[in-house]
Image (cartoon, rainbow over all chains, first blue to last red; front, top):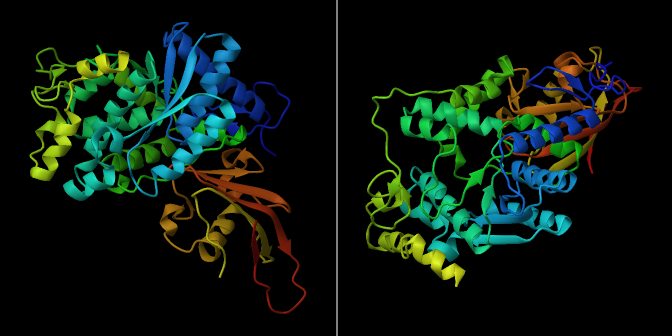
Length: 326
Length: 114
């Protein structure tokens, strides 16, 4: 009853690809998805032979597919990479422990080295403790800044040249919507194309940024990949939920919307007379910031909170680099 | 009552659906799931008479878009899989069969969790 695969003309189709509308069988879909990811890596010049790449691995579907694919494509096409798994433990009970277990299972099956950095180790605070201290509205912002730093520090520790994350086309589209909805012109401009890396920031790439989340899910399902996701317990309060709900409705009406939003972002040009936030460093802790103090250092804290800022900014990144390389 | 239909991990259910005058299509299956399997927060799974956006439906490992979506008529031994893109969990209803009712009273649907 279902249509025949438009690629091989032999097997019954398993899905209709959102971007093209083509009906493909399971085998042809897997092959097309792998080939497209390879083309995105080559066309984007994401890697150079001999590089060490730390894959941000959360145990979820995107990073599991990313790690699986990078290992497969590296072997198939000879990228010449040294691949590592890098996980961040934010200290969110009931959420991160289970997904870290999935990362460890992937590590055992793939044989890739794994390093886990935790907020508790780095900052002395877990996200649960931060959330209790700050309340639910600010904690996601902190988590984002902390995670970025944690990945950088973990990558430096592991001797990685680059960090690869599993952001997909839906994530990109949601971010575009969020930035428009909040009038965040600085992020809209930063998002389009790679900007210069700040001090201590390890270069990043998103090899799956063209891939629809739906196809990532189906790739993982058809390949029998083991992953774990539960919504973060703090996510219901996060603004991204609105953008996500809107995107899902848009996609249902017009499947190309996800890719189209990404195209719009890449072709976005902002008025030349706009005053843009400059990329500098925080006066207090030395990390990347677009204002004199970065987001964490800005928050006024009572005494118990200042220890949080101190641990975050305890050493400048330059000092840390020296420490790790000695 | 019936088992919970959850999306945190893989859950497999063997389902036997009671015979009824109307044919068993996905539309009716969703209604049946809502009444018999979803214990709480049905809005996470069902919106109106269809699944919430972000829930993928596979019938015998093929996207339901290719099979007629809500209008697909279920056949014996069909396997229906629901995948939540948000939560990542997979829930499958396998080996669907339709009971032939020999007694006057309609038998309850049997759901066995694997």
